[in-house]
Image (cartoon, rainbow, N blue to C red; front, side, top):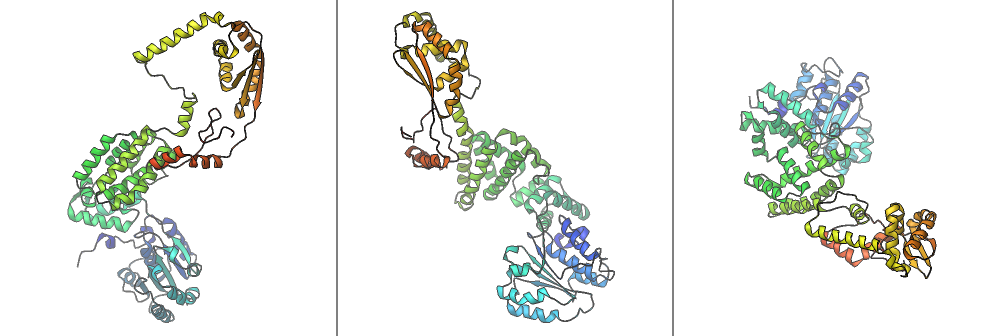
Length: 538
């Protein structure tokens, strides 16, 4: 007997054997138990997740000698014929090669006849979305009201291509991708049963490469088993070009931290080992995506399907950066991936993309820059250089000299002494000093007017309450009795939409956007500093 590949040898024969499709298995078992089996089903989902296999198990369950039963025996003649594909009453039709109306007419003729030796005739139409529109139309009446002994199962990977008129006549059961953990567990069971030696990390890499398809994972395992008796991580990497998690983690860390030398060295190592950089870019995209999801969700368990090694690597990295930083990296990688895939020199394209992304580590968000400008960020001050210390000491000396010679200011104009006035106020009432700095001050011969614009008008009441203190300080310094008034001016509000439009039309901002291929995410009006794209009147 010729060799039977693992995907066929270990094909599930009962509903309990189905991996990752427990909900669908339960629906079908209950339908059989309650005698509520529909006349037509649509099984949709990715490749290799068990659609056709489930249709065969359903056929065995309906025609088993001890049935209909949710647990077919697998030993009676009917079950064995379905298993080896020789049953006259279970027909598997390839929708890709039977697309015409004539094929469906022939099917309609055969449907009329009773089963040869079973309870039901089961027609399994694989890749049903390949049927032509005319073929679907010809099938409609039969699909809606088939003879009582006929069951239709339409299997497809593209349910969107199935006409709504067909969908409405069938029960739709969507199959999902199988998780990497369940694929790994199944591979481990099969490896032990077949005497295949494989490490856990190797099985994890196979499960990741299968992308949710059990059939693909068994095909890969079959291929690797022919290459080596002891399957390890290195064999998987050499044959499939899959990148290990450690490399992905190190490269991601280099991009996040701005380590450009590390980026060059890692890509150089990948190139020297013959790695497929186009496939590597896809793996990197997936890793950054998982990192972003973990950063947002705060955990990886029950959120994304990760192996223990992947989860450990992501947990170490997720606190090194922000969601915004990762979102920009992922967005730019998605944009660059088609170019890397089609590039004549993919190494250069990948290097330049990652180096450019690494520069994001030195950039600050607009909000952070605005906080720094407005003095709201109280970061620790770095050690002063000798030169800086000299100028700081000189400034301190000048301040002392000004304080010691205030009597010289008597007779000066109010505008000349105002800075000295608010410095004096700062010594005893710093909050008042800060509020006075927010206002616009004008001077007369014996009058000081303080005006607060727009949102700064909240300071007006507090300043009014402290007018006696301000008067006293002015009198102490200048020897003059002055009147002080506090006023507020309402500023016409401007919508963010208008601000964004003004920003887009500003030549400086427009040039910056073109230079850095950027876009305006948000506009925050600054109440203290006039916008460069506003007119003096506005």
